[in-house]
Image (cartoon, rainbow, N blue to C red):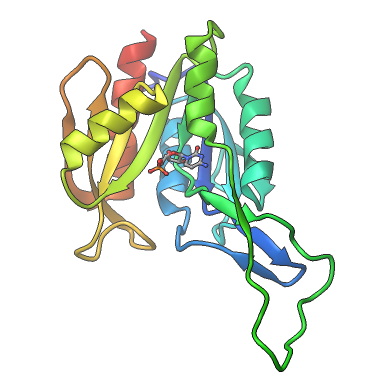
Length: 223
Ligand code: C5P
């Protein structure tokens, strides 16, 4: 069975992909399935953790042993993650959060007109991961361990290391994108970058393997 090395720990995991409303029926979204986040939730619960799973638009059954909070947009995800992280040991931002949202979502459905369509103005969403890192730099002790995800295609180590430092996280899981991996697939391959430590390679395999490699590093930092 799984080691019980997360017993008594509270972990918050975001999963899935946000949807940013254009009007009541349309949104800007992404292809995140939530599979990696759900694997993190399942494996953390198996290792004894109390799990809060903030799920953005995920079409998967609730994992056993997790408290699931459903959200849609980046702003809702931010509220839910910040509320839950106030007393959490660990936050893992596995969700694909939209970088931008429509500045002025319409209250009623945009009509098809004969002329050119109106452009959709975008504004920046807050970077939740960076915000957690900043708060901790300002002296907030929680969450004790902050984990980010990144999909990088080239210069994986250099770009990942820079992102780890920029966002102030302790671990950054860099997914290898392409070759039938990452979005919507059961398998993943990743490098876990560790602040002040050596990177850990996780060879291609089930998303539970990446999740367990993350929890190994988290457990080491908590003890
Ligand atoms: O900068 P980039 O989007 O590649 O960083 C990805 C990481 O940052 C993921 O962990 C993601 O959940 C998080 N993120 C966030 N808020 C955003 C954008 C990304 O927390 N607005």
